[in-house]
View 1 (cartoon, helix red, strand yellow):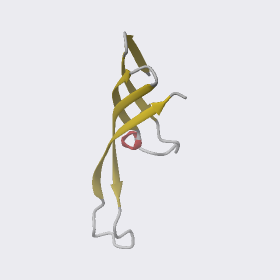
View 2: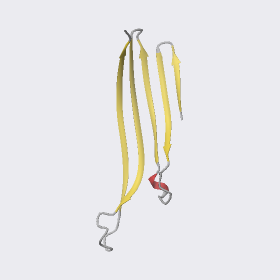
View 3: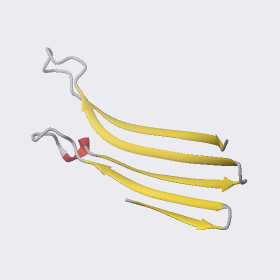
View 4: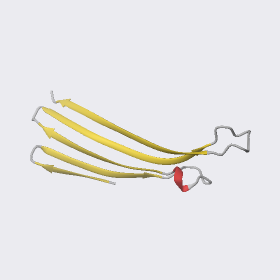
Length: 90
């Protein structure tokens, strides 16, 4: 789900994403959620865009599955990235 607003030469973008785990028996914590935001500027023959995206997911990992005495570890997985794009119109 997202939106883009243009005001003169500026573009403002934002969005939210939700990705459900593809496995039927997976816990709800395997679902991925995140958001993105960006801004762009149109110079005429050149466009510059900068975007930020982040996502979060919770999971558990069994380091030693052969040993019942060792508990699984709960993981919080955060991913973030910044992307910059420049486009030249020829």
